[in-house]
Image (cartoon, rainbow, N blue to C red):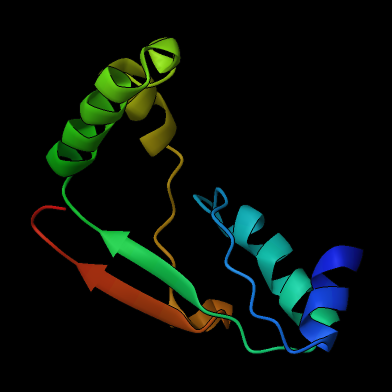
Length: 101
């Protein structure tokens, strides 16, 4: 959090790729935004499960060492806990809906 605060104090933007599958995980992000006194934006890529699986399989081919975690079984285990973000969370939500990437 200290590094993020220092960067934003110097007018630098920060792009973070972090797990925000649940409201609780996104609360951490909101705390960071508030501590840095900046405007945040949460970009939610809203796609069908099949698109996600296709991306996982592609990444698995590109990075074979990830095969234990990049697979359909793990995807379906994780997706059970997913809570779709909403504007009520106050994170500057931007939803991108696509059929493929």
